Length: 197
Image 1 (cartoon, rainbow, N blue to C red):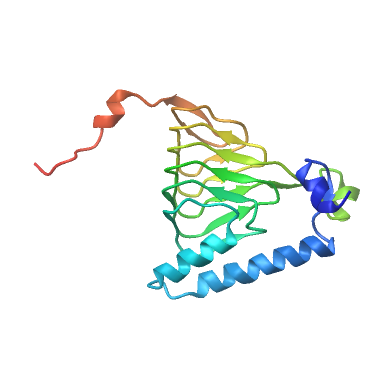
Image 2: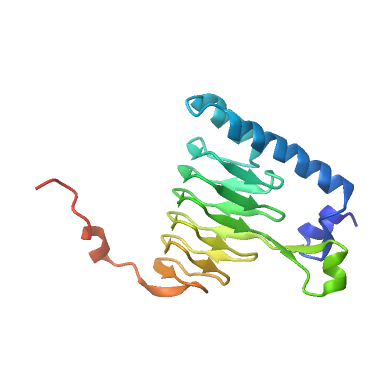
């Protein structure tokens, strides 16, 4: 079993020193570097490169510079995806976003984790557990999402949260560790003024 196959199976694997994985990461990092150095007004070229980096995308997507990921091919984004500046996705396992997802600045999605045992960790062993974000999800600024987490549809994660466990659909959640604060209700539809008075 290769180290890549071990990672896909959720087993401890050598993500640090394995030459094949190092080469794949370097190829991806080179594309991310190219993306981050592109002139911001080159929108079509930027979108084309994003589609080359990511494993699967909808037609309508946008990621502000800077953006970094490990492999790229493990990232899937649905239609109408937007991420603001300084997005980091450690996609050692699948990281999937549904349709209509919005990600604020300085967010990280970390499918990678290192062994707790010091001897295993010093050998470069780590784990890779998938992250799944549903449809119509808003992730606030400076949120960190940890390995193995699922966030349900129609949910909002408050800025600064650290999401270590699954969050259900249709809720506002926040904190460290992130917990459900309340359900999102019909009253929330009218919370903000829509027209100038």
